[in-house]
Image (tube, rainbow, N blue to C red; front, top):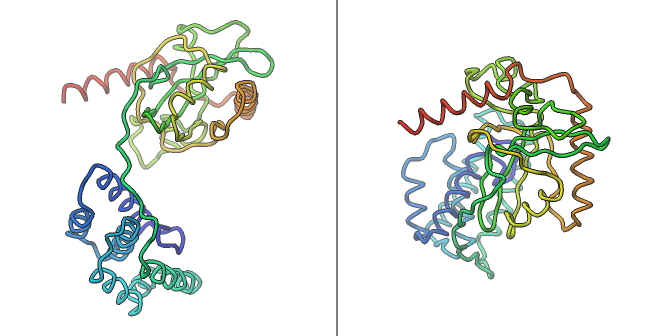
Length: 303
């Protein structure tokens, strides 16, 4: 079930259902068509998480009919979800809190929602100079230069996802692409069988020192404006793409601030991160890693 708390959306399955429902709903699909599709192949362990998530989504858009509401009501009153959770090893504290949450959930969806959730226009992809593989130089608090590599980015008109890998470069003069290619990633978990023993070491994943985040509301324009106050792009590597599977910290893009404020935040964070473990980095230099990405991208294009 992948549950981490007792709430209706406190598990992977419910969140996945909610995400897929609204993604399809925003693209114009009928709400009940989506519901019927997502309930056509239910698994016992996930069944109630799927049904509760769909009931909530349908309630949000004003499409929760009496028949489905009655089905949800009977599941909750008969404690079917609680019995399954107990079979899967839930303790008494979890079951008690889950029971309270289900009662509140049923009470909520039993009353028609007044302000219905409207369809949102699909996101429009936009181009960004900070695309995957962008090499960005900056200055640490002491004035020395460092470099980041952009990875795992997705840029849209209203939302932006991004992540950066920090290199072990720290030098008195502005680094060149040649300097970057002979440097290493400042992250012991990147391309590491020790940290990622459950994956083949050919896969690149960063779990420790990856700076990442998420923006809304004209995100890409805002994101680029802030980045331009700190970073200078000196070139591009291959598309390093989806090689981030976890994050250690984020830059504070979220609230309004001046460019100077943002620069101070970023410089302080990167300096702290470098000083924490400056001698721990990847065995392979960046050029060797980049060559593997080029090969991987070529194979994908052929396939």
